[in-house]
Length: 208
Image (cartoon, rainbow, N blue to C red; front, side):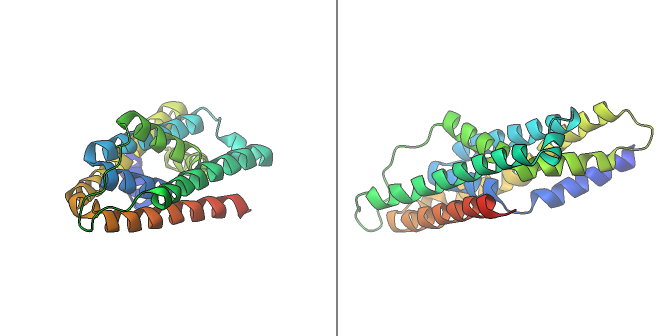
């Protein structure tokens, strides 16, 4: 059983390193609004990870494998969320009045509660996370071990590993946020992150 936990910890860490929509949203929030807001986004993301893990443990996310309609509903919903977030970022850049060169951008910061919600929605609206949970977690359950408790334990480990990975990213983003908050740099970053989110949403919507 100890070998299974160690193997799962290593595999979950490798998976956490793969960039995706959550990475874009977390880094963007940390740079634009600071480390605390970035950490709130991370906590929201980990709530989504934990929910997918619990769904896999209780067999709910197996519906994504059994029902094409269920998968498509979550896929289109997730795509719409990503496109909306990206388009909103691009629209803010377009309508924002230019400020003196070198001055930090003056915009109302996103609340930590809203950042947490963004992290949760971004993760939980991704059907790939559900498919990953239902196909990945059971592989590490040792033969003869109680399945439900093991899957619940793996779900918690998955969320903790994800948290460990994002902590240094948020810290690094906070370190450079002073430079990146300058008007010209921030506008460019908002354009890039908005375009990436729209691209990820479109890709999620059109892929089979």
